[in-house]
Image: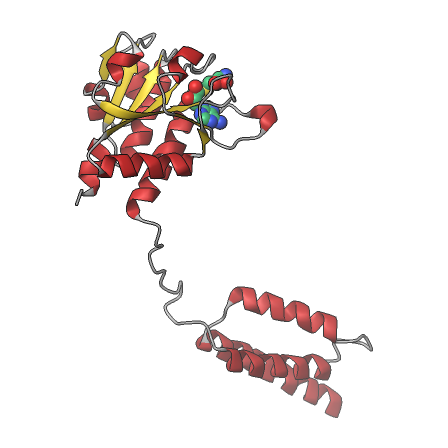
Length: 252
Ligand code: SAH
C-alpha cells in the first residue's frame, strides 16, 4: 500500500516556457498547499527570480528543488503518464478528460508505482501541438467557452486540488452539528408550527388572508435554520409572550 507521501512524490508539475516568474512562484505555492513538492521547469524566461520567490510565499523548497530543463522530454524523464492541460480544444488526436478524471488516472498510475507528469503551457500560447503530442490525454478545466483561459498558477491550483481531494478519498468526513446539539426532530418541529400558527391567528397577523402560503414559507425558513431543542424553547417562549400580550390587549 502506498502512503499519501509516496503518491505525492510520484506526481510532478511541469511548467513549459513560462514567461512570468511570478507565475512560477504562485504555482509553487499552489502545489505546496496541496501537499506536492515536485516542480519541473522547461526553458523558463526568468528563473531563479525575485518575483518567483516573493509569490512562492514560503514554498521556498519547491523552488529550490525545481528542475530546469532544455526541453519537455527532459522534464518527463522517468514518468509513464503525462497529462497536458489546455484551455483550448486543439487539433490533436488526444482523449479529452476533466481534471477529476485526470486526478483518478494519475492516482491509479501512482498507486501502481508509476510516475506522473501534469504539463502546463505558456501563458500566452499554451501548449504547442508538438508538446501535447507527448501527452497521453488532454485535460480541460471546464471554463466558459468565451473566456476559457485561467491564469497559469490557478490552473495548477485546480489540478492540485483535484488530486488532493482524490487522495483523501471520496468519503466526506462526518461533520459535527455546528452548534453542538442536533436539530430538533420532526415531531418537535410540528409542535412548533402549530404554536406558530395559533399565535399568528391570535395576534391577527393574517388580516383575513389565507394562512396557507405564509405558513409554507415560514416552514421553509425554519427548515433551513434547523433549530435545536434549546432554540425551539426560546421560540416557544416568544410565541407564548406574544399570545399573552394579545390576550391582554383583547381584554382591555
Ligand atoms: N491561450 C492559452 C492559455 C494559456 S494559460 C491557451 O489557449 O492554451 C496557461 C496554461 O494554463 C495553459 O497552457 C494550460 O496549461 C493552463 N490552463 C489555463 N486555462 C485552462 C483550462 N481552462 N483548462 C486547462 N488548462 C488551462
